[in-house]
Amino acid sequence: MSERLIPTRVGGLKVTVIGDGHPRPTAVLWHSLFVDERSWERVIPALSRDRRLILVTGPGHGTSRDVGRRYSMEDCAAAALQVLQALGVDGPVDWVGNAWGGHVGIVVAAGHPDRVRTLVAAGTPVHPYPLASRLQTSLLLVLYRLLGPIRYLTDAVVEALLSDHTRATDPDAVALVRDCFTSADRAGLANAIVSISLKRADLKPVLPAVQAPTLFMTGSAHPDWSPQQMRAAAALLPHGSTRVVDGPAYLVPLEAPDEFSRRVLEFWTATPPHDTDG
Image 1 (cartoon, helix red, strand yellow):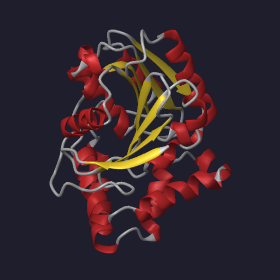
Image 2 (image 1 turned 135 degrees about the vertical axis):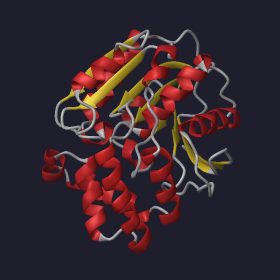
Image 3 (image 1 turned 180 degrees about the vertical axis):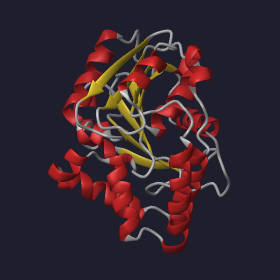
Image 4 (image 1 turned 90 degrees about the vertical axis):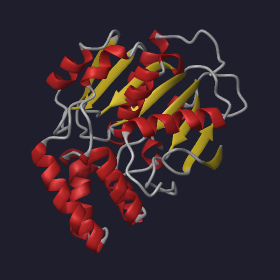
């Protein structure tokens, strides 16, 4: 495993590479808002058996930097391509994104079809952020900027990201989410919340341009991405499929790692790579 900070359009991003030096296809993993690359830890053992993994830590999260200005999903997509260029990855990759990471993957796949072989987007609503949620998040953001990650806000993030079942039965998942949120740089995370959540655009118009085979996944307890919404969005894709995972809310890889890994591996097996130049 290797780690490095790569300069990009959205600031210096921490990038972790697992399985380098072995001739195998490459998969890029980009996490959800409010957590960092540690949210993939439970699925890495399974996914790394057949893929070299590139874990991108988004701006304002973990030890990644903040660019100091607002940025868009298109900027994040451009940053992902800069990461691949810096690592010498010229071929198509298997993109695996959770929430924010799924949004970035959709934009990359739509604008650069030669760079994405398959796309997995888990817990990734493609409609704009609902007005009621935007207002609530805006109010909480004011408190966060003033007071930092106080317990009230940390509890709110945990309750939003994790299902009731996960919070009641998985203290390690709860602890991870809490630590990701409380350890993030305050200014950087606040910028990310505004840039990629409050300003989240409607991605439905770009879905027909995604040529890569795509798997949309949602947790049964996701409050903003119902199975019906997911299936309607997948119908706009040239090669779309869907899976509902019983139990999770936003963080399917963390809350249901075994089923998530199984679904991803099945999807990859159904779309075998032509070569390993990614």
